[in-house]
Image 1: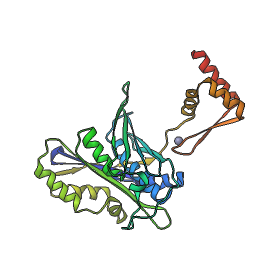
Image 2 (image 1 turned 45 degrees about the horizontal axis):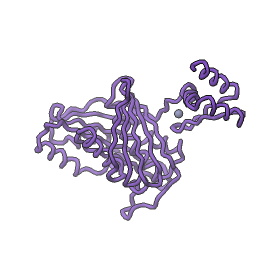
Image 3 (image 1 turned 90 degrees about the horizontal axis):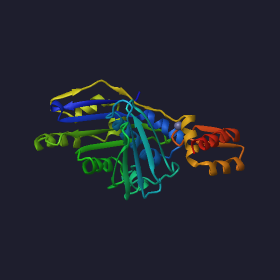
Image 4 (image 1 turned 45 degrees about the vertical axis):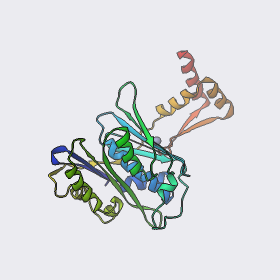
Length: 294
Ligand SMILES: [Zn+2]
């Protein structure tokens, strides 16, 4: 089962979120028929948006977009506050040869130049948007840079996906560690030492080390409290009503063109592959709706 644990260190000066996401990343791989490099990139993004989702409350949602100049052509992931995450990569079939160290070459697939953006819908009139340039294409480092420059929140970010020889996801996970701005350098140094002595998260999870144990390692030799686990899932929030809204946004002229061109119009959800079918009669009804609004 995929889940997240949160922990606090030194009475709340440090907050740690650790997620194991093996099952949800494998589900994403199957839905999108993604190559090893593509699922490594998408899986990192899914893991990190799942963690950021857990920083939200109630009906709030968050989406993360990574638009790099690499061949994957863009990664889109989102989450609600209840651990329901979903995402897709524009070209899931793209695969690259491994790096000289034998690792999946996520940075080259994403691209080292581009933009990382975050949109938080907090239920206010306008969603909160922020973005920064990519600094590495590795996704975790790009997000850490985003946190420090766009939100003035110093953070350590790690995420990884381990893909086996057959192309299946054997382990996936990651963590985000945030410190309060007034945290002493001595404390930050202890934290950095703990983190730099650890293996990457996908390796730890592959060895069967739990998110609780990873949180313990991050907060080693510090005053700490680890909280109960919270479930994470790959789950889509698409619906026929949302598909109708996509069609309504096209406007009367385009809807007429669709009616003239084909009997059935399909709206495919990019996140889960679900297809919503609309007959010419359905489209006529949508046109009437738009006419009544004019
Ligand atoms: Zn969907």
